[in-house]
Amino acid sequence: MDVSPFPYQGPLEPDQVRGRLDLVADLTERVTEHRVTALLGPRRYGKTSVLRRVASDVIAGGAAVVWVDLYEVASMADLAARLDDALARVTGTFAAKATKIAAAASLNLGLVRLELRAPTRERADPLLTTHALLEVLTRSAAETPTLVVVDEFSGIARVDGAAGLMRTHLQHHYQEMGLVFAGSEPSMMRTLFTEQAEPFYAQADLVEIGPLEAAEVVELVSRGFADTGRRAGSLPSRIAAFVEGHPQRAMQVADTAWRLVPPDGEADLATWEEALAGVRAATADGNERLYSGLQEGERGVLRVLASGGSIFGTAAEVLGLAGGTAQNARQRLVDRGHLLRVADRYVLVDPVFADWLRNRFPL
Ligand SMILES: Nc1ncnc2c1ncn2[C@@H]1O[C@H](COP(=O)(O)OP(=O)(O)OP(=O)(O)O)[C@@H](O)[C@H]1O
Ligand SMILES: [Mg+2]
Image 1 (cartoon, rainbow, N blue to C red):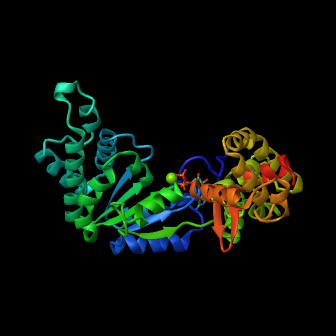
Image 2 (image 1 turned 120 degrees about the horizontal axis):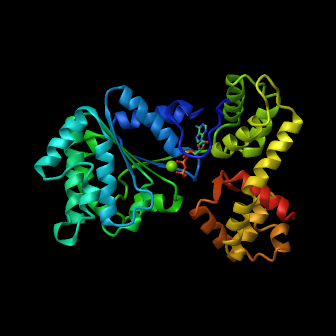
Image 3 (image 1 turned 120 degrees about the vertical axis):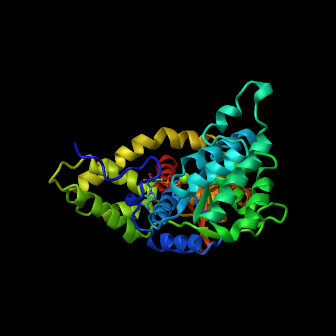
């Protein structure tokens, strides 16, 4: 059995990343020049994958990568554990230095999580441990070329004082390391770097990850089929037109179609139709749940925009959407990453959800 060339569930391996050449080059230059960068973009747009690609290039160039994942970080102790995991996974010169510096502070890298769960009397203090681990990070990075990636950085907002603590340690070392923050909650990420009250205010250049170009989608579908001995026919351009540059949806639709085509076979119109039906069936429940969890004004705005209308147009009138309510709802949808502003238009981030809305509620 062939393995599908279109994985669509987790982050990709570095050599599976398609397109994104300019972004990878830009990020690589930024981390090499030690310009602190925040990578912003909607869910499933490939932030983690692109950074893994940059990280693997950096490692190939001889530097160390410390990859800190703050997804849903819940407390100071959890933050300490995440930092410890990140430090313990590094190898080479960095690891040797980090282990030594940690030992001098009575820290056993890789075991901090356990020490934070020890019976109360012997338990390490989470705040002091976090301080100490950040010290290990910055001191080791000062001695050896290092890239620090903080993925899902918006999680930091869940832990009181954590952003301030990280800034205190990192800010004196910006010029000694590559540092990239990435995150999916667009409004929270923006707030963390652009609001004066936030510790990381104006501390990073913001870089947006946009949709893939139609040509990149066409290329990735064609290549996946060709590499596995199948012909894609007109499928690549149909997929590109449907997914509007959404990377994960492009891969999901391509995967569904690919499974319908035997080795040496060729995709045709029926393949496309069956693949589309398959993706619709696989995502219908999720879309229904997502929709029913939204407020009424938000639902109205999504329905109007999915059908290509304006929240001030006739479609909005039909739904009884008042101007002010619609504008507020639209802003909330942007903040939560459901909508994206493209030039002067607002579009749904997820083309599959947009397609579901159009079919479920024709206007
Ligand atoms: N450059 C790319 N080429 C091909 N597929 C891609 C690319 N970028 C993303 N994808 C697809 O999107 C999926 C999600 O990628 P990834 O996890 O990197 O996104 P993310 O933005 O980090 O998502 P999240 O917001 O969930 O953290 C991948 O499994 C892959 O199918
Ligand atoms: Mg990610």
